[in-house]
Image 1 (cartoon, chains in turn red, brown):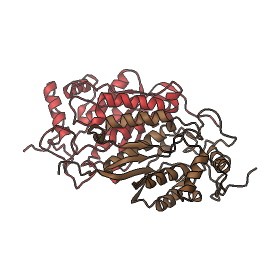
Image 2 (tube, rainbow over the protein chains, first blue to last red):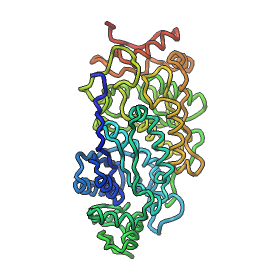
Image 3 (cartoon, rainbow over the protein chains, first blue to last red):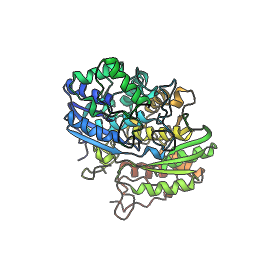
Image 4 (tube, rainbow over the protein chains, first blue to last red):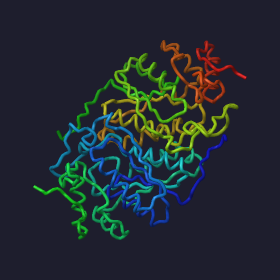
Length: 235
Length: 235
């Protein structure tokens, strides 16, 4: 009873599944590579909680072995328009710099939780859909951040110290949104299952104007693919 | 409405407060250095949830401006005797290697949350009571891990990228438990407020036998200080 109950499982991976297009494709690529999946979705008080329903659809399509939805109330911390309803999500175009939808330390918290679950499950890999080309400028999506997180994880976990650490896979890192839309089609994953909008309409449509909607829409257009998304009527 | 509402506060720090002796002293040193404090306590499904009551006592003694108790159910992940009641906490002495009380990625998750709160609050420093001398051998308490986390945080946060990042302070890193007990006394903080035991008795006493109790007891003894802790009768 005194040793750890964790048994390593060489073909098991944990995918951080937001319900968005990117994490859906990251999960699909993990499946294509032969990994079995545990999915983790974080319910963090985001204004677009509708994405959690999308995550459930995607998890089913990816045939995951287990889907954990973990509530953690980051709105108690404040500091972002995604968790503070009194702060507006910007709608006038993808701007330079880091927008107010940035949630302080979000991907650091999410990767830390995914790492914890992976280590506890005996999984060898984490899949995350971060992307540093068509993105909102968040610092926690960039390759040097992911590399630094990997290094920190190797030093700060039992599995890392014992030389059987968890590897962080970010297969979308250098893809454009058009590449990602094409990958979804190639993998046979219906992009209409996924959710991107930060500020859904009361009717449950994509707003069509936030950064995330603009990047999504542009991706399908540039890929020459039909966009299955239901956007609110554009002004 | 499109810019971040976060205003930097040069004398504000966030202390990760477990309710234990170490984080109490870390918070006391922050106060002595002139920082005002926000305290963060994580209710993670630990079997020794009684430590949260201790954290409240300590937060009051440190005169913190705000105390956030954040629930996050790491027991859903498993993998540790601290969160799985069917796995026994070892009681036969501080062993070599990493014990089964290790919670996968715990300090990574906790530091990530503390960082998120610090960034959202405009705080400039984080205080954490990690210690790498009289400790249980957890990899996420060691100096090279803390340095790697600091590096990752600088790259992965808005504040870090903008050159006004959050600094991680681990003032107990090279102290013995005896040093820490003496520091508590010097700072006028009653060590009897704090809680260390991993496996409390049904009567709410320290068990006296787990790693954490052994290290605590040895600390007071080596410091030549009276140990205010109420231990269960030792066998």
